[in-house]
Image (cartoon, rainbow, N blue to C red):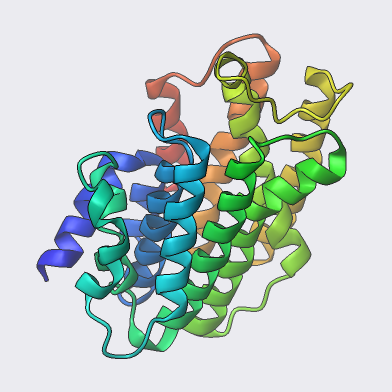
Amino acid sequence: MKVHKDALQILKETSRTFYIPITRLPANLQEAVASAYLCMRAIDEIEDHPHLDNQTKAKILRDISLVLQSGHQNMAQEEMTIVIRAYEDVIPEVSSRFGEWALLAPSSIRGRIWDSTAAMADRMAYWSENNWTIKTKSHLDQYTFSVAGAVGILLSDLWAWHDNAQTNRDDAIGFGRGLQAINILRNHQEDKLRGVSFFPEGWQLEDMFEYARYNLSLGDAYTNSLPRGPAQQFCQIPLTLAHATLTVLKLGKPKLSRNDVMALVAKVCQ
């Protein structure tokens, strides 16, 4: 199917980290996870867009949320993408084609992915309007849940849908929060240049390191609870990279080298 091939190609271009574990998932589950990842990457690219003002970002994100909430069994991708047609020349391909990604998942789980993406788009709109202002740990928890912790819950629902695997949803949230905390640590200097800080007032680097360590420990528990197989390996890859990135950041290095990433991924996939 052409859309499936296109989806995997776009996935490879946008995230080599997730491309590998997604391609190793069994049929149907692969399409569901790819659909979820690409839908959320589509709205993430809008939230992070360097040339759109915050109010425009919020409008686009809320329009996407509403069109997903109006989704139905016979919905065509043109009905979904009409809300972003005016911005097709500005936003990246992964965003302009979100209607295709939304329809990629099997129909029996599609509505759950739409619900999760719509909710995340609304939350991203809120943070865009508020210029990602984080003053307390509660604000940080709210933000990391909005854009990552909720992804952990969706993954749990996808595992349960596929083979009835049962997981702890609190640990699932920690899995997502831990990965997002690593992103915050890795990008905090760039964020400062655009006038944004995800560090609560008074927090130093060590405080965010501790926040990341705690949530990654929940991610470890989450991943270890999964039965051995593709779903567990799917979670092990980003979690292993997150732990390794935390180590190099503590040493003052900016990120893992590409060779380090490929070696770690190969080790997990043995």
